[in-house]
Image 1: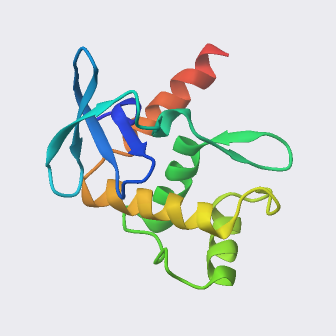
Image 2 (image 1 turned 135 degrees about the vertical axis):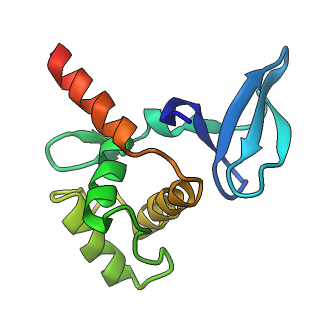
Image 3 (image 1 turned 180 degrees about the vertical axis):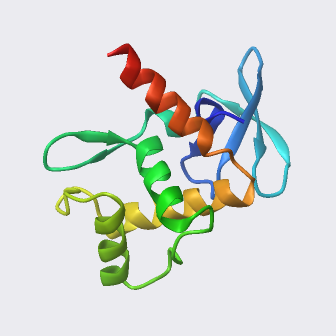
Amino acid sequence: MKLEKVIAIAGKPGLYEIISQSKSGVIVESLADKKRFPVNSLHNISTLNDIAIYTYEEEVPLKQVFLSIFEKQASEKSIDPKSSKNDLINYFGEVLPGFDEERVYPSNIKKILSWYNALVDAKFDFASIKQELEEENAEE
């Protein structure tokens, strides 16, 4: 599974993997329960690979944040996304120093941590993100 194929659907909990394309949209499979269903153009979807997090200097790709959490947690799940607001902000500050606290809300942090935990549950290969980032840096 590649991060380019993992999406979040507005209004639906959890993460989904794109399985195939159809005439009217895409077929996705839930990472949690493996149920498949079609998603059409009326749904608002976001690929995790295209999401970035605001910092005071730049926007950091979500995959880089996931890699930081992965390295901090040593392949384990992150803290509980339902932790207190201060705990979430402090934890996220350790993972992504300098994140813009005025534009990255605690609800965003909860969502990022729940996505990360869903990827851990789905046995996502975070080493592939590290390779991808190294290749991107080598090209520049």
